[in-house]
Length: 270
Image (tube, rainbow, N blue to C red; front, side, top):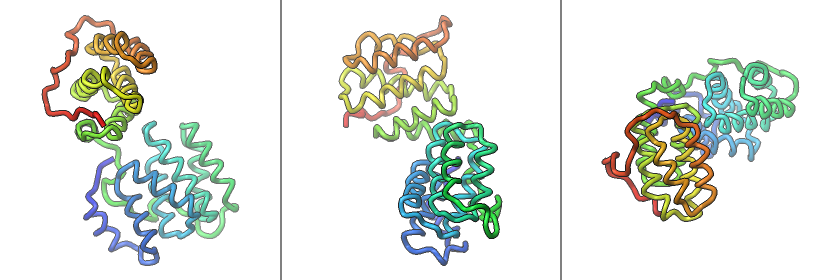
């Protein structure tokens, strides 16, 4: 999805029908419309926990869900499931048809289950039903990213210098099946620089880097994963390296070596 600046979002919302929102609900609306999948999940969880039933806010939830579910990446499913749960927790029958559509048309089992469970919390379709387009999302906010945009965003995440962003990027490489050599070079470089000194708290992130490498199928990284498999002090990481090495092609190509990616990188030592 394309990211939109917070300033633009605030400008957009100030001209929409948000006058009925409290300050807290306005904050949730800003999170929903930020274009960030993690903020989308957080906002949905807040709506679910507080059982917010304000239709001004829930219309945004419904529109995002209807826009995103047909072509959702696997990394987005959890956030979309929370959108469905938020609609269900509202007990507002206006969204009965929205959840019914998701249940009947999604090809993602997890999303279908959560939408179906949410649907059980709603009365049968009552009052005017929400239909796609009743709320106008900011232009471009939830369109599927072009390949070049996706690669640029993932590179920025990977080089942000924190483990959460690095892990998120690795997960998205897997879910979007992005086989880009530069991104995979970054994953390999981060793995080689850090696996030998990693703490237990870092292993899950490094395991996701091996998943990202394995998902590309690129033979260039066979020796990287072999080194981690042979030398990691953590059995979990060795197993992930072994499993993902088996996914790589057998082509006779130049193998990645530490230092081939020569842009500045964080050490991820925290």
